[in-house]
Structures are given as structure tokens and as C-alpha cells.
Image (cartoon, rainbow, N blue to C red):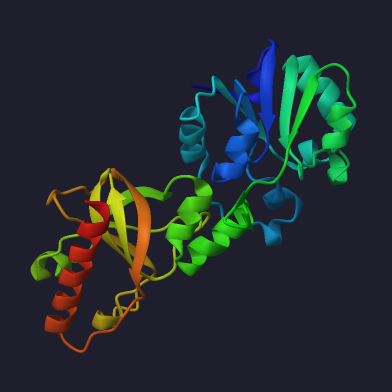
Length: 288
């Protein structure tokens, strides 16, 4: 899939889906379905319009692009969203960008999509424009719940990654560079690849999770290691069940399957090791 900045896009007949698409969840996939091009924003518009209330995101632009590519989309066009762009009238966006620059023939948006200065543009405005066809997609529900990025963020922050994965249509992903940790894990027989969470992105609640790390089963601990009284910042520690390799400096992708338990403080190392063994066994049962 080609990734294009808006200024570099050239007109061609496009079937275009427009949205922020944070998480590329089931609702987003319904909007994107049938489109050859996706138009999105970077950074998230709320980080510019209401910076103090901007959410932590489910996906970086890199991960978003990969998820969109997996849907068979030909091109991802990125709008560098800033105060100047936020001030543009909705009609100017349609005339100059959708029609003039991109040459759209079809536009697909969610029913709650808003655009242009002060959110004046809406799906009705697009549908009334005779220069292209407009498809307005109703909000998707799963098990009686409306699928939305804000709801999924809340689930992830609560540690309910299994439910979040159902709404995403795939496991929640955390990706980062492996950093050096201490040697306690290796000494205990559970060497880990450690990540420091990106503060711009959502991180699951403290606890232990069954997951897949680079497609292999992994027991993942998120927390501050209270048993050792470290007082450290939040750390993600992934014990890769079938590998004992030095991953320092590489990028590790973790797909969260299910939360096993909350973060605990143990009175002695024997109790900690026994619990870790149970965590590993449960992870293997869930992830193979």
C-alpha cells in the first residue's frame, strides 16, 4: 500500500473513506469496505483543537497504516492536521481537496463524521454534493455495544483486552523497542524482553496477560514490580515462552489476548515463581 501526504496526492478516480480511524476497529472497517483509498489525519485532530483533552491513541500512524493495508486498500493519504487546516471551511475542504486534489468519485464516512471549521461539515453535506456518490455507514454494534475508539480505549485501560479485541476485530497491539532490564527475570528462569510504553498511546492496565509476541506465545507483565520495591516507572515485560534470545534494540510487537490477573506483591521469591509458572501454563493454554 502506498502512503501519501495530502500535498503530494494527484487527482485520479478514487473511492475514498475518510476518518481518523484510530484502532481500525470493526466500525472503521465497515466505513473502509469497498474503498481503494483511505484519508486520515496526523496528529489526531483533538490534539490540535482541544490539546488538553486529546486522548491517548490505540495505534500509531505506522500501525494504523499496516492495519489499513491489511484491508486491501491501495493508498493511505495523510493530512498533516494543524491549526491552519482546522480553520478551513468545510466547503473549502470538499472543493479543494476531495474534488480538486483527489478527484473522488465515491466518498464513505461514518454517520458521526464531522469536518471543517467548528465541525460544520457532516455526512448530509457530502450526500447533497452531486459531484460524487456518498455512502454513510451507521454505527456498528457488537453484543449490544456501539463500537467506538473511545469505548475501546476505556476497555484497554481497564485491562479488558479480550473484549477490546472483539470490538477491534483483532487483538490490541502494543509495539516498541526492547530496552535493557535488570537480570532478575533471567535469574528466576523467566527472561523478559522489556518495553517502555509510549506515553502518547494507550497501555493496558497493570497486571499479567496472555499474549503473542512476534506471533509466539508470551506471558506479559505490566507494572512497577512491587515485589522488588523498585519504584520504577511503568514497564512492559514479555516472557517469550518458546524463545530465549537477546532482543535488545529490536522492535517487538505484542498482541494481547486476555488478562490473567492484576499486579500482585509477593512475600517471597518462591511464591512469585510459583505464580509465574501458573501464568505461563495459562498463557500456553490460551495462545498455544
